[in-house]
Image 1 (cartoon, rainbow, N blue to C red):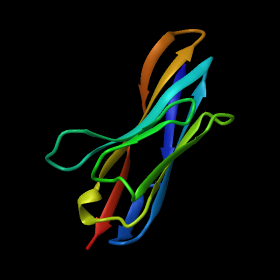
Image 2: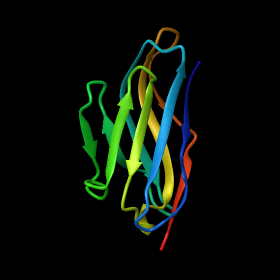
Image 3: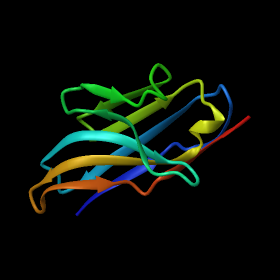
Image 4: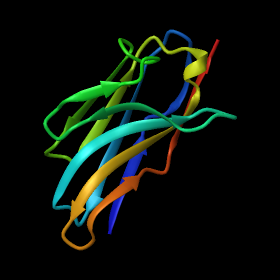
Length: 120
C-alpha cells in the first residue's frame, strides 16, 4: 500500500508564510513527478506547482515568485514554501505523486488535503 501524508497547513495573515510537507510511504520503487494542487471554495481544483524527480519545476502564474516547490528524494517528500500569502490563496491544498510501486505498478496518488486559510 502507498500513501501520501500532508502536514503544515493552517491560518496565517496576509503577507505571511507557510510551508507544506507531503511524505510518500509504503511499497515504493520510484517516485516520479510530485506536485501540489488546490481547491478554493466554489472553484475547481487547480495545479499549483510540480517538480520532477530530477528537480525541474513548474508553477501556476498566480503563485510564481511567491511559492517554491522542492523535494527530498531520500525521504520521498515534497515541500511547498508559500510566501507573501494572499486571501485568494485560501484553499485546501492536495499533494500529488506519480509512484511506481513493486506491488501496484505505476499509479497516481493523492494526499488527504490540508487547509490553508489566509486572513486579510
